[in-house]
Length: 423
Image (cartoon, rainbow, N blue to C red; front, top):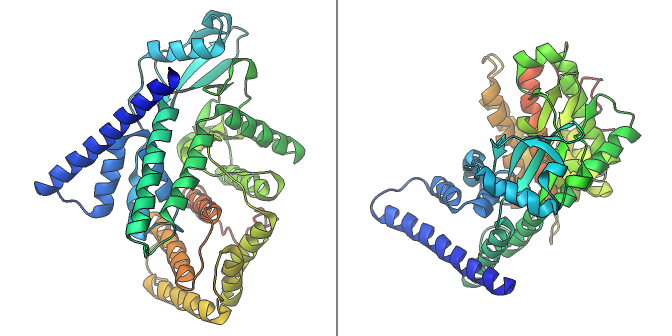
């Protein structure tokens, strides 16, 4: 019976998808023609959960997608209307398999946040602890699987019809997306990530950072109950001053914790945007939301470490050598040719930003983004294809670069001895 229901739901979902695509096509015919990247982003947001996540994947993957699309999908919003509390309460009751009031003294019916896969409610346990409950929305997993199978089939057809697509294997990208998205739907995996990161903090004697405690007796694959943190986002400078006397030191704690996880934890937090890094009332840095993590092999990390060191000192032969070790290639890459192209890019960027021009933080973000995308493009023109983990790493570096501009504009991240970037 369940298989039949899922098949019907799947067929209905494909119908919905074709309907949205049809509506977009009609609007195009009627003259509503934004640039292709913007049109695709708007269409993805109309299609819901899977496509919003796909949009975020594009935004964090300059190694896979053309620059115009990576930039446009930075605006891909994952904020959806919250479901009625009666639906959420029913899911919690089903997952607990016992009366709710035996576990929770109260649950706030107004959601703290609502995204495409889950929504979050504040609550209090019968034992008195303040918690948040992350509840997976009904039917999400089935919708994801239907959408991703549809996308995979479409990608295979497209690859057959146009085998000379200028970038990497489409069906391979869809498979990678499917793996990461299905992991995000499994809250037991996320709970385990939180525990592993907590152990990493304990083993490295790090008392300045923390992660929420998981309450296992009221967590399942579809609901995750965690300690509630009270604090402010890392970028809220005025509020941080009330919690931490030295915002610069708070930022260094966050960065050193993350850098240490690259070599001393089995994964790194792969989504350190401001909403996922909090400064708590006691001044500690709280890392939250471990739905997206990255794993990097030790040999790849050594190459990334060499890449950063070489960029710092402007050693383009070193940058080229590290890029070749990070990338995957089926042809011989000439280090000196790649180094020359990187040197030309650097000189070109240098000319674009004269020293006497006043410093603009927003412009700096764009410059760093552009330089990294151009470096990736140059690498690909020499036959290199970079793993997505490299893009995820670079994305987190960009986030931290942004936080430095806000919280510690005088700090030189490459020279500051308090930062353990490469240890």
